[in-house]
Each structure stands twice: as structure tokens, then as C-alpha cells.
Image (spheres, rainbow, N blue to C red):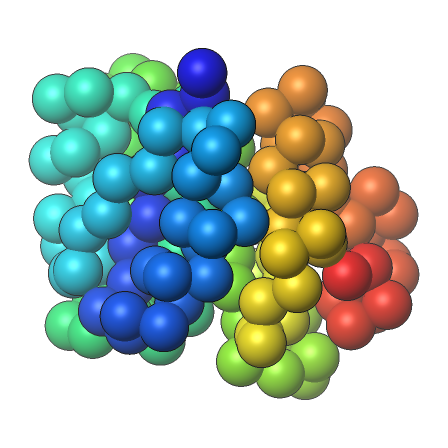
Length: 136
């Protein structure tokens, strides 16, 4: 069963992700972006799902930090799915080198498709030039 690390301080997002992925994935949660690196270091997940608006260290900074640490060999490379607030935030996901993104509110079917794609080594949306809203 794939292990998914969710970083969000919003309970409704945690509920939506658990409802969409919980049956086929082990979903664990941290509430602060700064805690993601420690979780990835101690028990590397198969996928990280980052809320763009997570408190104290946003999703963009967390994503960039994970990529830098993986590039330096300090952490395992893990695919990252970013949950965006609006379609206009796609440039933030691209700039932080997220492997995939979805626009909130979360569509359960879209989230499952994105997770499946990223877990199999793909990207989401499959065509990164595709608008995020059209991907879900």
C-alpha cells in the first residue's frame, strides 16, 4: 500500500485527501511545512501532498526545500503533488518544481488519478502545459 505524506493545517483538506486515497493508500499527516523534511528523512513516503497555504513554511518553500535536499543526497527523492488555491497559482507549482498539482476544492477522482500518475513515475497533469483546472 503506497504511503502518502500530507502536509496541511486545514482539516477539510485532510478529510478530503483521506476520503479519496485512504482505502488504497496509507495517509499520514503533518500540520506544518517545516515538519515535512523530518518526516521524509525518518520514513520516506511514496508521495508527498503539499497544501500551498500550509502555515509557517508554505507549500512552495517546502517543495523547493525537499528538491534541494534530495539533490544534495540528504533525502530520498519523492514525487510531490501540490494543492493550489486557484488556477493562477500553477506558476508557483512549476517554479517550485512540483511533480504535479491540483486546484482546490479537491476532486476525489482527480486526486486519485494524480496520485496514481505520480506514484508510477509520471507527472500530473500529464501535459504540464495543460491548465491545472482542466486536469482535474
